[in-house]
Image (cartoon, rainbow, N blue to C red; front, side, top):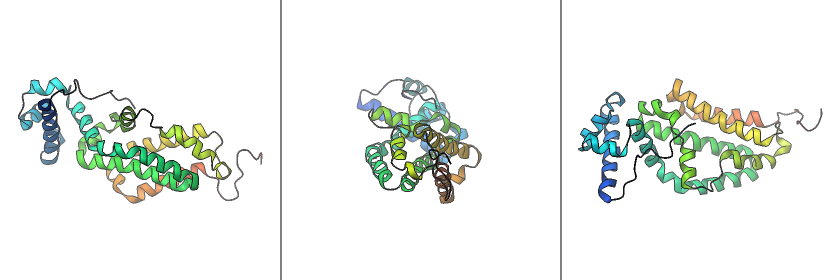
Length: 222
């Protein structure tokens, strides 16, 4: 998924500039809540924020850049939890692959739920363009991606798995989860608010990875 290194044209260097950015983001959220995303234009955002359109364009190229920055701000509080969550997922993987996958699915869906509930229909317009993993990786360069830590977790449970190429399987899990969530946001967004959706995603990944009773593993030659 493509994403810009930063939605900002320039970074704020003074408290006044930071206050302007805050006003722009808050104005956009108020418009989305009170007027709907059809009214979300840069001119309307500048008007509600009480600034000139020129001031807005000093920092943002368009409303999509503002939305991406709002997404970053809404999820910033989660960044401090990322390394803890990564450690928790890796620790779970040693004991239970099912629990690891359940935890991973819960976290991924919850993030999209939060942005959808905050940005409403506008998130449905931009969700393919926003890449939280890329943003968090810039904040924490040493943070392992799912495709980096999941293969070793699969290796620990190889006797219970039907897959043999753990690197490929990790890529399949990450891409399937991401693609399913985004496709659901396109076609039936309310579904991501359902626990049944989370449960079925979890079950789908488990069934892909694990052998069914009586099924031979790929290394047995049976």
